[in-house]
Image 1 (cartoon, one colour):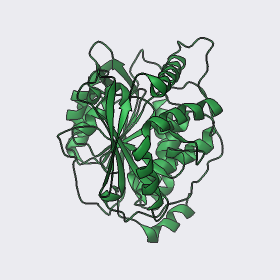
Image 2 (cartoon, one colour):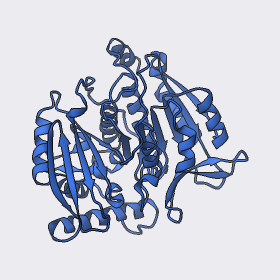
Image 3 (cartoon, one colour):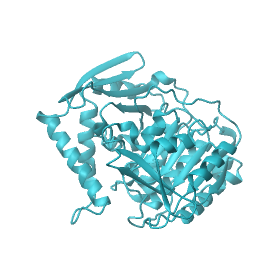
Image 4 (cartoon, one colour):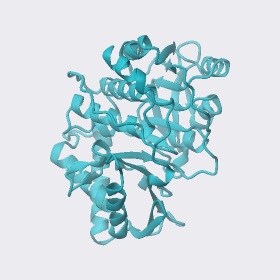
Length: 403
């Protein structure tokens, strides 16, 4: 997580989408398939209902190669600026962001895949399409596909009417449990180890409590905090009592030597203790947790050789139903806004994909639609329509009235 700049603006409330009754066949799934990651071309497979479409997915040469070069340059520039290496350079904004998104869109929807995408959108009764993207190629999966911009509709997919969700290739089924009707239980775990950059964990935990107070007062959610979390304390808390959502506030990183993502907890004396993806997976896996929210920088990035060794992909690959993470450094205010809107929608019985899209819309209005912030959070989930609670239509008005 990063405090790279301060920002605040009046809160905007996105329009609500009723819980969808669509089945899993109404999800448009996009797969990038390749038996050889070093090959110049791969295959893009699209699946919707009983239809399939296949198209080449070239990575070098011609128009596609030129697009990839522009995408990679913009990606590396963004990383350099956010990591303090981009002297004299700025983050893409406005027109540049749309151009970057258009390149991503054109690669994602070629030929018959584009036609299937258009048909799938036209068949949605509420106009919102669930889309799940999965890639076998690590450096392809690691690009910011949430920015995809449809030049015909003149909109970024993830903030218009597409629930853009990611998945990973894994042989481990996701944990599935029945929807509970009691309040949404959120556990906030904070870590501020000595020597690490400040993350304002106490302030953000207080913001989380304040932001969710209307939900708590309405009996829709409860929030508890494990401050200065050590691996042992977090393990003990999760094993003693299941929670629906684990919200981590702290630092994340990617170790190029180990080729694996990690989070930084504390060691009991306030010193940093790196917890790699495998260890963190043991702490949070099979605990009855539906969603893990990693408010830490680079927590949404995948492994450079094995994508599933990144922190968020590793958790999903191990069976955690859903993970929200960040693909770039994130503002404290942006992360809190996104979390507040996401949890509010989930507590009311909205699906994961719907909740994430509404949170992006709120964040785009709050931070500005020309900025990158709304595309930084990444949702990994097996099923974008999955809910953490049954729809609470009778209590929705009550909850909103108390905001």
